[in-house]
Image 1: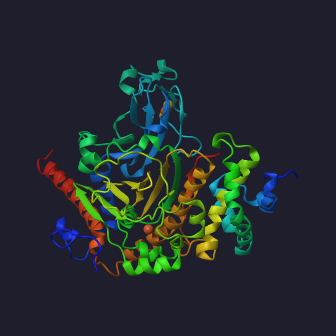
Image 2: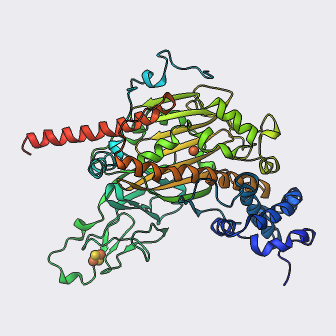
Image 3: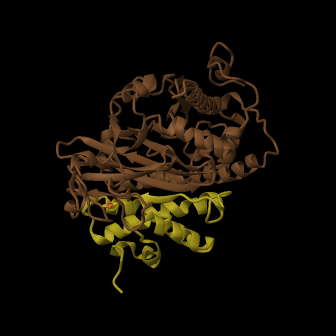
Length: 110
Length: 424
Ligand code: FES
Ligand SMILES: [Fe+2]
């Protein structure tokens, strides 16, 4: 299978198939479906590379991102989303939100 | 210990002439009271249903389900670029005119005319009936008399409002002093939209209550901050910079935001990396001077203003120059649909897009906690086990909201009584 991410982000490639998701509802569902161990592994690899990944995407016009940069930015969106379970909650859902839902029904797509 | 000054009366509640007695929530657990609110409030006041950017060209339209006013409305831009609103209902036999697949689901799009799915009657963008299938079968049908039923529509600062009141106050006048105070804010520049929607198991007013006080914030949301910061916030508690009331409308002006934070250890690693968080990207776009009604206390600690334009439209202006709206659309006395849209200036690059994403993600972490308490409160209120609830001075706007609703209902009842007494 060809790589989803730019070659210099080969260390993030193992997470790409799972986390390069264009829509927030898919990223949210993935977060709820993941174990803390899975998210921690993704977060730990992503965290030290975040600044370089942003710099890579910023070499292009946001409206005209090549596919691999678009995938990378989607991966960063997922990174932002999993930061909450890892940095704050210690569980996939926010504390005390068991029966609440908040569906992102509109978002700008890349 | 007081951190911010209060009015001379000693409290905001007394300053606004509101009762300091315990409140009761009978207005939030009663089907009968809700039925009265529908007539007295939702069929009488201006309701915000969208923004002008949703209708970019002639033929652009959207529908809005307004259970609270017992109807669905169709908003469209006509060939002259004017906005029109109609009951979304065919004049032949009453079929809902515009929908796809699911009659209850809102739709939007662009078209040249509206065609009823049932027998094919057609209406132009001004609601005029233009085509009747087998017209010769009807009896002296004058098409002029069967255009779509119009509704009053007006625009304030790019926000589209409708009202079912046959004799409405002009919209700009309805928005009052606080509306005037935010006029000129560059809403039209902030076109990057993210919308969340939720079906909530509570009376519509209970969610407004939750968003018109921040007394809960250091407690319900305490785990959201790094622990040392959270201990400090909990000890500090919450005090607003200022409150204001103008007729049925209300606002709370609040401190906060730390953008950028004085000490980077006060924020989470992801915030340090992306320079963004609940209050949005630390460096917002330059939008020049803010309108005079924003940050009315002119406090350097200012972070956010929350306006409630009665009955169900909230506007939140954040220090890093972005805004959001809340809408609470009742579907019964103990259910409503909550919608929030976060509006940012279009991001100039991937980093700004990612900063905005973190703010939108963070909103959800908080919003889920806020939403989750509501059904729990509603069911216990409905138990009737306790009927008196002490409200503190930082909950002053809750008293105001419930008082305004009761006043509208009472006025509606006394008008109806006067009409009945006259034997009309
Ligand atoms: S109900 Fe619309 S054409 Fe008959
Ligand atoms: Fe909250």
